[in-house]
Amino acid sequence: MRQSSLEVLNVGCQLAVECHGKLGAIVIESDVSADELIRLASLCHYIILVQDRINPFEEDLYIRDLVSVCRQYKPNVFLLSATLFGKSIAPAIAVQLQVGLTADCTELRMDSSALIQIRPALGGELLAEIKTLNNHIQMATVASGGVQAAPPQAFLHTGTQLFKVDTAISRIELTDWRKAELSATPEHSEIVVGVGRGIKYENEFLAIRKFAQDIGASIGFTRAVIDESWADERNLIGQTGKSIKPRIYFAFGISGAIHHITGIRGAQYIIAVNTDREAPIFKYAHYGIVAEPLQFITDISKHLAAQREPSPAADG
Image 1 (tube, rainbow, N blue to C red):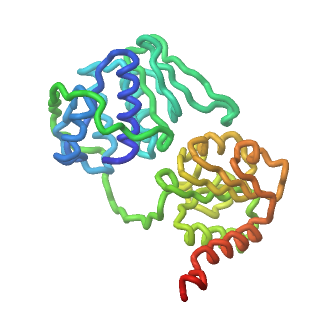
Image 2: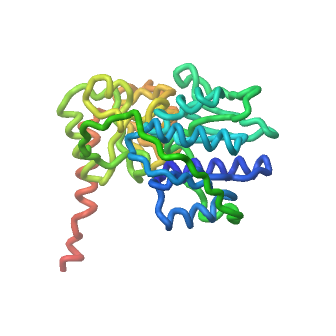
Image 3: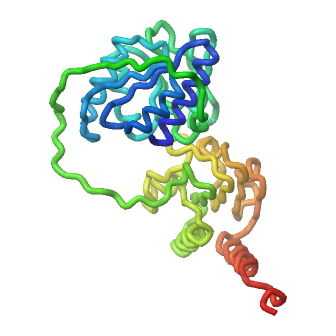
């Protein structure tokens, strides 16, 4: 089961407790193993198992099944993860159900039966609190990496609801596909190295990438770096990308715009390296270093190398 699914389950658990409601999970049969169903049974009041075999690329069939389940069971709140797949199907589901949708929520809570949906707004300058009024289903997507995964056990499982749908043929024709070579992603890494607009030269960029490899870190980028085509959007950190919660986050050449800060609030320690001593990132950093990135990397690499070398006493 994907981490993003567990995160949504955790949010659902918390909301169900707040409103004294019940938590259900919709499972497409082709997406889950027997062991995962057993785990779900310890987390949910109900499991709605859709008996349908769907190719992962047939989004229209996922939309059809989820819309059908919502129409039959009429949940008060319906959540999806704000992954690329979730973001792709959520708007279509909302349109067919004729309900509102709040995307990329970083926090959700219940006010009686009303869902309070909190997400960054105005380029991340503020957090908006949203209520979906007069809707029979309150629908939102949960920012991936922004919350904790579900606890080991939240509710006692009280029954499996089996929902059957007729077999249908997708209107999507798959003509070709290829498997991407994915590197470590920042949202689930203990150490993350971030690269921002202040890194202007290729030698700096390569040095930072090697530094990340040497310390076993994944690497992420601000929107400015993505726009320069230096990096893949899958590793974008911030309001429109991934929210991360590493133990250590190195911020190289990152100014500290609020839409990036939104994505790194969960970091235990933020270490900022920037030549501009007035950069806003220093207001959020636990440790701030005013220095050239290459000089910092050289110095810290020497220090780490010295730490690894055995002392003369140990050799004797």
